[in-house]
Image 1: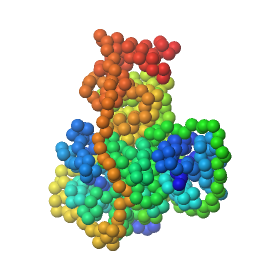
Image 2: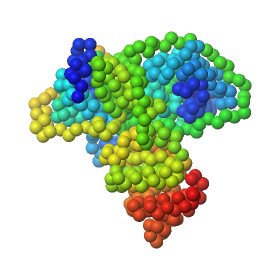
Image 3: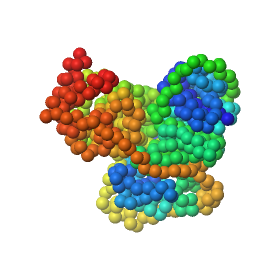
Image 4: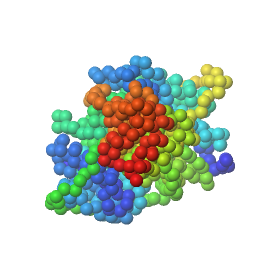
Length: 324
Length: 276
């Protein structure tokens, strides 16, 4: 019995953060089931991943090139690899690629999928996925009827795999899969540079984030300044985005970017469940809000009950001085 | 504004089908949120029912395409119980051309696979060039319906789309891909899942259009009409437990005589975290 982590390497053969999360989550599933961990790799440019140090027993990869990431083509590639590997459970990281491919893969394999998984546990010899539902207000355990279950993580919910002592080199299986021609399929014609926010938020170590309590778009300037001082990124709650104060690329939450910084500084954010669900991976949450009963303080480690307009300017000066 | 010809595809008028899920208001505060652990589903309690927020964004994108080319047809489609017809009435008040409910009563509460099958079959029955749905529903947050419907229809799927432009018979779709915002070029038939953007907040219906919906009919399709029996629409997943997680947490309050003192105290504590 095996658990198969699917690695989608859009930048050649180097395992990126999402791939390491897929391996980390795969290991959790494999432990719960008492199964072996294997990996299936689709890489742009036909790169080859070095996975021996991650405890992977076998690697399944394409015999031919995959080309650049294109959902329909890479989905066919994954389908071919998963069918060849014959796993009990398949795990993908929940970045944009995993989210769009996981459900389709589960359907294609005739089994099913669970998205936004934050944990796995075995019940009666079968794997159940634990996931937040209703914007984080409830937790569900979900079982897929068919086999292999396709499980997509909620980004950052699982610790990325760390390379350990190099075990036995994994067996490498090359699988010939015929990919559909790219002609007629959707294709990327332009990448849009974002001035702030965007996928960079998902990697940021420090985030200063604003909500409806800021009172207007102009007040994000203070957050930008604080972010500059501490070397962080600026994000926002959905309320601030819906008010039109910042673009949607800033949005953090279950329905925006899922983030996992070392420091998350929430300013004027009340803390709707769906927002809290998106910051569950943050190491330290610090909240500044006028309202001591705001739900954000239920998850904050440090709380300041005060008008942010009065706190941020002296805080910025203090930190400037201390950080030199 | 694009020429009308830009929207023509294969010599046919573009027909857009928008999936609308009618759900418990996701904005309801946690203290008012109730579940039935035994039945493993939420109970309505004090929550009102609303169109799932991302489905509203999908509807707005479809209406914008119709604004730019009046020959575009928009069909609002909901798979759900009779209460879902409220969502369809709202869509009618926003001047969609048709509104159709797929009756799900024999299935209980369908999972993502079941909903996708019902929507896909309804699109085949009603005709359509593009199926638009929200990127995920605001209740179970699964994000499965659109991508799986694409599999069943055999159409490509572009996810997390926020804006649509038409040019030279093709669509230019702004969407959030794994490497950030990008523009994807695609030709129908297509399934699009839609995410929110400042440019796709659902418009407000006009009073006279609300009045006019009284004379309009919501169409209904039964499983039988779609050539399906309940056995042919099996769930592929099962919720084995549902509960409200218990949180134990203590917040350390930063105290001080005034805001400046609090700012200094906060700076001390932030430095002590050793993350700056």
